[in-house]
Image (cartoon, rainbow over all chains, first blue to last red):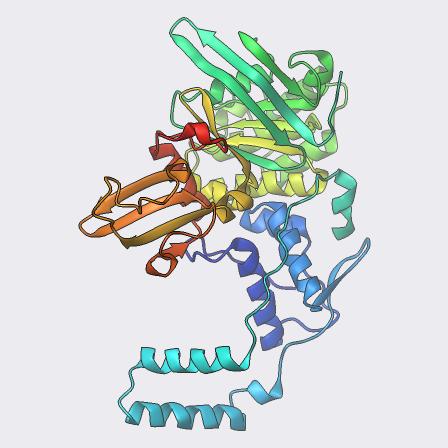
Length: 148
Length: 303
């Protein structure tokens, strides 16, 4: 189980903050396959956001195949995002560190390096596809009980 | 009587006049059921009048208002509506237990378990006198009374106005949790726009007794843009002559820079010269509160 927190000044949509925090927890191993996510009620009681925001975040995570709802039981983690190749002691990280050192030696500032890396990333990874617009359906009390 | 189950509160040409003039005039809106609507507007915009019309404490001078299809104040509407007024009227000499019993006896379909759960979650002793409670505890008891009624529609007039920040989050969390459990429709007025941003998914903005904005919060943010760029010296507002002025909510020129909030109607003239971003809900509401224009979808609203 994880606890969410909301940065109201970040400019990132609240539902996306929730999505990112679950992804981060999956990368760090804080959440593992089979773990249950907090129910919508638990989340909104703690951080005082609209329940639809939580449902929207969970739907997005479900769309990405990271979690699955189990009717009457809650929302559960399906797969992990932790990758050995991205760990702090991995060869890839060492290569990246060496590359950054060369960029710095060539006189680039931090922002130049970040811009360069971002442009290479953009070339290699297609832009993320935007999730479909979310219009919450009118709810009856029953539809939310899936989370209990 | 037509009862559209997806609409909780519907106004048709709604108007209410007091001696001083119209508090609300020609209002048309439909607030969706099962959602949380933010009722926003400056003081005197008609927010409290609207709450009093919705509870049947006032009658409209013109037009009509319907709560789940029923006339406010009728038994059908009263059973489904709970109203928490700004000053949270409670009897200070009652104990918490007596207050809940009062709610039970006034309401046929009373949820004692829910009311007690809400009170207990705040560590409030049932034998405490209401007059001796802190403001946060009193708010909790008032909310317990409102939720014990099993309302379909909960009206909250500035519910958090006098609370400290921790209690505000706790009280808002309580409202959100009950909404998550039961799919209640909430209409909540507040001046704290940043708080509404995360709590509400629908917006009704009143100004000078008229509806200025009514829609899904996310859609409104997506259909408006904040643009920054080089001011056009040939126009008064600094915006390109080709831009449709009907969609301009506000525009201001500072030196050579122009800054504007627009209803997004298509590509901007000279698209690449603009920094374009979607406004936050708070940003959007502030722009409409400041602006005197009424950018209705119809083009006759051009200033």
